[in-house]
Figure 1: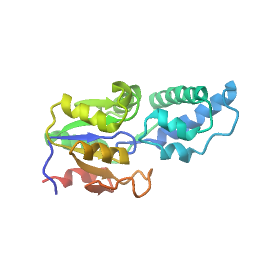
Figure 2: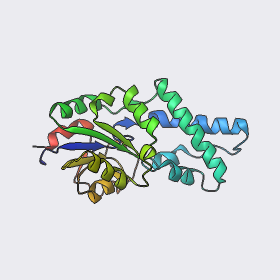
Figure 3: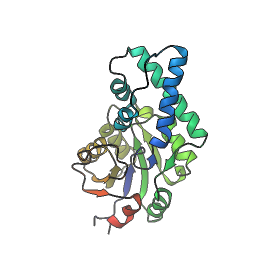
Figure 4: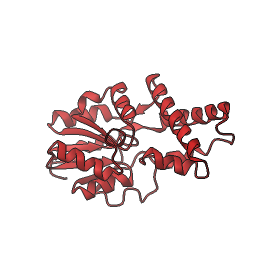
Amino acid sequence: MFPKPEAMIFDMDGTLFQTESLLIPAYHATFDEMRREGSYTESTPDEGIIIGCLGMVLEEIWRRVLPDAEERVRQRADELFVRYELEYLENGYGELYPGVEDTLSKLKDAGIRLFVASNGLEDYVRGVARLKGIAPLFEELYSAGEHQTSSKVDLVRLLLERHKVRSAWMVGDRSSDVEAGLKNGLTVIGCDYAGFGDGSELNGSHVRLRSFAELPGLYA
């Protein structure tokens, strides 16, 4: 058991949102479109590569997915991918993890301030929260795309400073979340149910969750 925090800061993908339920169809649509227009002629890179990159900023993701491509090809992939993600999101693709909405409501009712800190783009992060019905539960949604931060450490630091948060938990599924929490002096709750990373992703977290609904049981 930990002391009840003033605030909790959540990653979005792999923590609140089952990213692969939106990402995989958008990923394949991106490369199908690029082949149609002639900007890319090879087969679609294995979807496991982009799933393994979740939590990174988009620039780094495309360097890993297309390591040998010209920059203009990566930029086109990025442009189309974002377009398809938003389009599919509006059309109902994508799901929250089980228990997310109910658990967030319980935390908010308990007086805990709720935030999102994501390495995603602003329209995507806000779109997921709005279309999945959880936006009203958060005090604010922070994204690397909106604030142009180079790391989640900087994004979380900005959030803490702007909102004068004195004690908080960082809740996420990737090593970038662990780093952001530890370097900002926060308790780190690792989400071990998405299955995107290897076993070392959450090294350094203070506790690991097997389901999101376990969260309220962690504080006294």
